[in-house]
Amino acid sequence: MEEIRRAAAAYYENLPEEKKRYARFIFSEMDKNGDGKINLEEFMEYHNKDNNSALTHPSLFRALDKNNNGSLDFEEARVSYYIIQSGRALFCKTCNTFLTDVYFSCFQCFTSNDSTVSTYEICCDCFGGKKFTHHDDATFCDNYTLLSQGRSLALAAPPEKRSSVLRKIEMTVGVASVVVFAGTIIAPSTLCTIM
Ligand SMILES: [Ca+2]
Ligand SMILES: [Ca+2]
Ligand SMILES: [Zn+2]
Ligand SMILES: [Zn+2]
Image (cartoon, rainbow, N blue to C red; front, side):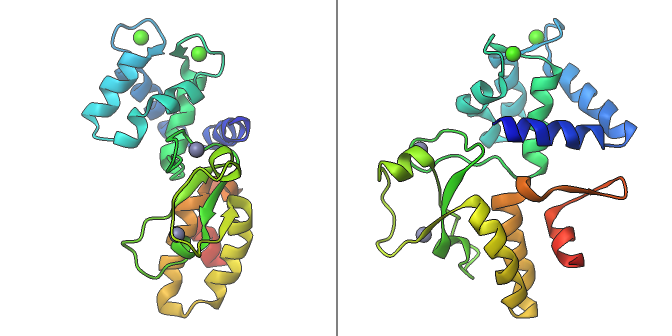
């Protein structure tokens, strides 16, 4: 989680002023009782209304609450903004915890040409403890391996398939490759296209 926090802070610092103001605005919208922090109830209420079901996961709130005091200050809450923007709202398919730094993903599902196949991610504990049921021939890779393999995969894919490969890479490993280019945040898909 620490890596995600640091990436989120860097991401925020590079946002244009209006986007920073917008992030503050969202924070104040969430803070119903105006005490300057977001409790679980306020967080759930806001995201339920938003229909953003991934964010109403209690394990995400716990992960965001860095100092474990049961509420989110602005610095803690802005990490959720980054998680949405980078497509990092991923949860373990077995135990349902929010996936932070390193996790494993089924290589076959990840690289499937069928867009209806969802990528299958599990946390290190469930993978290590073999606590998952998936198809027999599944090969699991950690997200960093997928990122480096993703580039070769994308380059090897026929041009008409390339964008769907890139989209999957972006969804699964987005956080690892957000970079700042000439003061503008470049999303992984754009980055891959210009490489
Ligand atoms: Ca509040
Ligand atoms: Ca807190
Ligand atoms: Zn798990
Ligand atoms: Zn699979």
